[in-house]
Structure formats: C-alpha cells, structure tokens
Length: 239
Image (cartoon, rainbow, N blue to C red; front, side, top):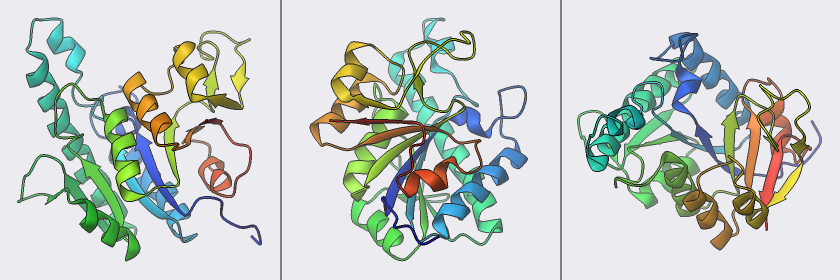
C-alpha cells in the first residue's frame, strides 16, 4: 500500500452485541468468524492487536439490578460472561490461523491464562492476538474502563471503540436522519456534552494519560484498515 502505518499497537474494544445474531442475544459463530476476519486483515499488516470484549449479548446487569440484585454480584456475572465471549472469539481466530491467547482478570486456570501485564506484552511482541477477559477483575468498573486501563498497560497507540455506527453523532443517527457526525472531539467536549463514546471513567483515564480514542463502524469492511493508516475514518477523541 506504500503508506505508513500510523498505529502499530491497538486495543480493540468490542461490544458483546457484536457477537450476537439477529436476536441481539447469544453467540453467533458466523459473527465471530466475521470479526476474526477483520482482525486478521489488520494483523496481517503487522499491527499488534489486543481485544477487550463486553458481555451485553449474554448478561445485562441492569435487568438484575432492576430486580434488586446486588451490584457487585451483577458485575461479577458480567465479567464471567466476557470470558465466554473471549473463548468464542479465540476459537474463531485460531481456525483462521491467528495464534491467540485469552487472559482473564479473574483467575480460571482451566480456560484462560491469568492476566499478567508483561506476559500480555510478550505475546503481542511474538505476533499473537491477546483477548483480555474478565473486565478489570473488580465490580463497579465497565468493560470500557477495562479497555482504557489495558490499553495503557500494554502501551497501545490508540483505543479503537468498534460500534455499528461510523463515529460519534450529536444525536442517535438511527432515529435522527439529520444527526451530525463529529470528525474530531476533545476529551473535555465529550465529557461535557455527555456523548455516548464510553463511560466517563474510561474517558477520564484516557484523558489523564493522553491516549487517543477512535470510534468507528466495525462492519464497514475497510474502516479499521484505513484508520490504521491515519485516514479520516470515524471520530477521533484526543486532547
């Protein structure tokens, strides 16, 4: 392609719903393979890829909380669900020839390595894709915050929030046809406008450590690849 890569190590934040089928619930093997192919496309460019995935396709803590469930219990259930998603994604990637490791912040030796920062970095240096499950290992923190934290720990150049819309808008583009997309935002603007990029803890963490956040449409075949070359794709949130 001739052009130079702008980002050499990325943390890709996926929603649990990205693995779900039409119902929006459960794990669809075809969706897992589709995501795996997109990751392979960028990995083949020589980019180090780490992934944090949510759990909304398997467990929504809100439904438990609405029935009076303890917040910590609901959060731990969500963290366990992220490991199930991580294993599904690992299987799809390995079938495509990507060497993949799952690390979990909640230790479960039979299915995943414990999360050890230096080991995760070593895997990336050896060309392996690392899927980081189990959130931060603590309740009261979202997978968005886990993604921001892990991105910092592994020395990622950018945190890429993969969604089903092509950036951040001033209102929901699915219900408002005249919604305007932002090309660039500052962390402060994002927080002040309460734009649904990531939760405020995650954005503050990125702001404090000057880690750029790029929001793009995962399902646009070329978006992720073009973004890595610094093309104007999605919405970039920086200082």
